[in-house]
Length: 340
Image: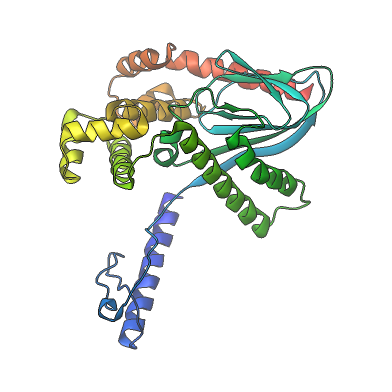
């Protein structure tokens, strides 16, 4: 799969390079010339431009899992569980009791809950009457989304709150789309578009609630630091102080300012962010039953299994084996409950 994707990417770059270079030779006002490695070089139309507006290069990954709308009996119970993705739960009508990390929320029509990765949660009917809820499991680039979620607690919003009112029209449209008899390309694109619009409203609402304006420069630098940390995690699994110094040097800022602005945006230090990302990766790998715990430790850059086990227990209070067994038990319980 990796080789196939790499081949497609390489072919795409070759096609783009040939196309743009051909247009250049024919005298077209092409903005970019692609080199052999697929990189864009000089802008040959700059001398002719009077004014322009350019959208920054962007790559945002959004994954959707198990999006559904469901009407259930008042006796409905969903066992306690957690996952490595985000969840939005919205009650369309009726009464649901939703519990996150031991904190109980009485959720009525229009009330909205956002569950963060790793949070233990469960739900049940609030009375004997049926109720209907919409559930969206999704994953999005953490370095973009995380700053808006780390400082807000709990992520429970009543129907009359500004944030819930902002998101309601999009949630209603998603609920309507789910009732469509088929999901072709157009429906899938509509769903993606609705999700991005809705998440935009979520960010605006959380920004208003937080009331702490940050400059674009501060946010952009923090994102760049987060991106470097994630790349380092993928390469070696480690984050030495020298790496933070290197990141700061590349961004032309001091180490102290690097730590300061990152904490201002993410409400945590770069090192804690690295631990957060590494823990999430460890949990995701441990949920893959075909991987041994030794293989997980190796994938994360640990050369000693006992070191990985001790670190994981410091993070979660559980050994890797206990975490895997507990999750398997919850999955089994969930399957049995779904069959009832």
